[in-house]
Amino acid sequence: MTDPTPTPTALPAYRRNDWTLDADSADLRRAAPEPRTVTFDALPQRLTVDLARTAVLVVDMQNDFCHPDGWLAGIGVDVSGGAGAVDALAGLLPRLRSAGVPVVWVSWGNRPDQVNLPPNVRHVYDPEGRGLGIGSGNSPAGAPVLEAGSWGAALVDGLAVERGDLSVDKYRMSGFVDTPLDSVLRQLRVDTLLLTGVNTDQCVYATLVDAANLGYDTVLLEEACATTSPDFCREATLYNVRQCFGFTAHVADLEAALG
Image (cartoon, rainbow, N blue to C red; front, side, top):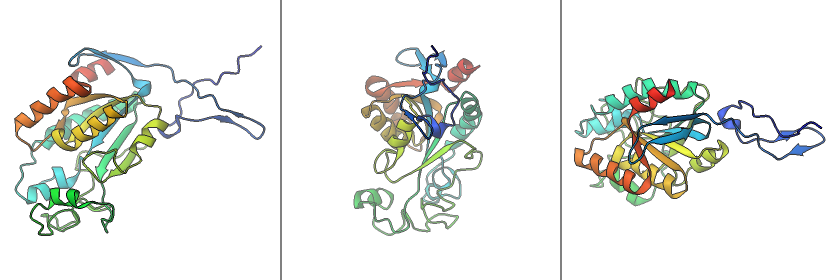
């Protein structure tokens, strides 16, 4: 007798959670993807990861945070450190895509009317209440700051959303609050998240902490992250990730494992 168990198939990233369905019946069993394991050095322990249950989150690699004509640069912040993260991601993401790892871009993309933004979030970007933060034209480029569809919210040069990638707008430091990110990852059947982007100690960290609290395994990739904060903020973040929430690893070690 033939085993009716569904055969694993290479479904697109957004169709990993699926039934076998026809006009007469629905088979609610999900096809189990074939494990694809890699092992690489990490802290506090060496890691073995199943790429079939892994996604990479790219947080806030946007013009307003990384470009010399963006909002942060316009208020006098040195954003040059983001170039290293761009280079690391430009090399790493094609390898992850080739390995079947979904790429999820998680970026600020605020509503023009800001009706879902509480005052404490607006305060972070406009601490003196002068109307120069989110939604304002207060950048060298003059684009609305971090507003969905604007130049400031677009990905910085050197990075691009490719076919098969997924994008999620966010409205807080964390990519999980008030967004569909958790639902998207559950449909991808993902357990492990690789965290990248800016700023290491702010939006990347907030997203990583919420991911860990939701039960995901988290790995922060050091060279694929950057911050405009003092270095002690980065060091404290790496310490806290290793101590409380997950793991840190070097991009080169992951790339070597990918082959």
